[in-house]
Image (cartoon, rainbow, N blue to C red; front, side, top):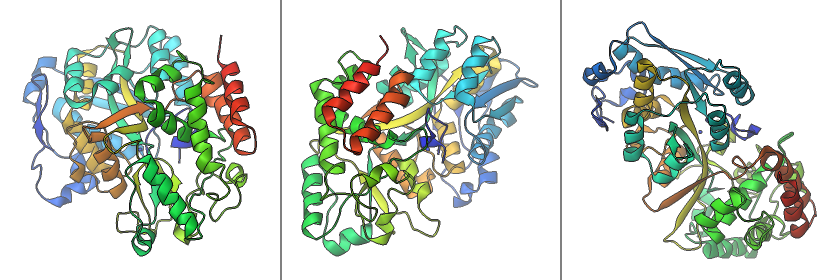
Length: 454
């Protein structure tokens, strides 16, 4: 898992030469498998020779503020230890469930941390607007140019200035399924949207209710439909149009958005397709998102569209793997050649430009840190091109990393997380819920458009 977003959806995400003259090497990289042990990972040595360019850092402290709390915080703290051992800097980690509210309060009050792990581009822009965030150093920018795609760098760039390296990432464009059912029934993983539709119809012909879903999430009820909608918007209209829609350069109730929601309705509002093992179409609104995909294990549902972090919702005794009880495949695009991916992520944003902060930022922007973190974590991946998927012990993490690192992948951040709060975490969720319980598409998109701040 990774840090909190505006909603509860995220609550419960190698040795080498790196850029800009900073060389870090993992001791015994590629050696014994026992490096997967947390304590072993934490104590791996890194080559500190080039850290002298930041001066004498011994005795210095860097404060880190984040919404990532126990137990997910342990892997972060462990991954910082090689840097602490190397430089003599102490990293003071503070996790807070109220992070997203409090980080803005602290920044505006002139009391920000040295560095914050920010889970949304929209929040990053708000922090920049306070005037307290500082541009990332040249070393970080160079590493991001080397290890991430331009789309990732753009999310942390405001008015032409770059503020922070990406950290963790999640893939939302996944469909969960039963490998055993696919093998026994002769089903194949679809590679286009047309093949997904054909597979669904084949399952109906086999007397099954193919899809299951749940969107209940307390005050955030409705958010899984927004993810479905965004995925379809990205696939049917392309990334450029998606960007214009998210930034409101084109209206929310335009023909593109309307067609995308109708495409979702072709699945979720189709009585022949849903809600396997749970009820009728309206049962989607009363089923929690945590329970939405569990009927796959019972054999009463075959397909469930949900993000990589959903793996944590299956029982501990369920094997989540390509040859297991349940696994996931990439939600295909219109054709097999394109690979649009919807997801989320975090960014390391600093509020101080002291040498020790710059050195720590640089460490976090390397492939070395990404691989140390990968070995220390379960349920964490990065879009850092230098990450070795073999350092990820979880099959779903490996799948997500493979998707993120595919050269054909076009990544786009969750749309509702970038929209104004009145829309993204209010009207969009509420209207999506009304839509699944019977409201028509036009009324739904019109109501969301009306909620957009003037």
